Length: 97
Image 1 (cartoon, rainbow, N blue to C red):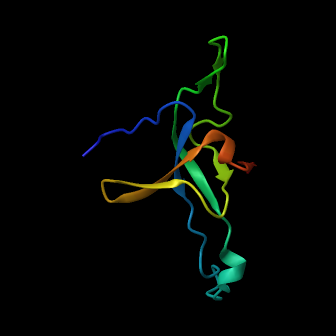
Image 2 (image 1 turned 45 degrees about the horizontal axis):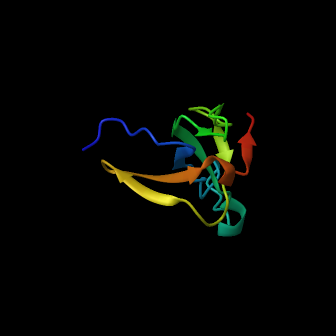
């Protein structure tokens, strides 16, 4: 079992956020209303290098909440948790709180 997973190059390890199925008052929400594909960044790679050898850094950092595409990414199981591995350019944006 790996203690810490560090992605290579421009890869980002993300733990998907599961939206609540009901409100605090106990009202059940329809599946369509709860479907938002977002996740929390757990680990990032070092970035890519351009033709001159300069490092192009990753656009997100650990702890950011990001919006993800509906399809894509690679599912990774570390311990008993499921994560997804995306390329930096596949992430649609950062969600500000």
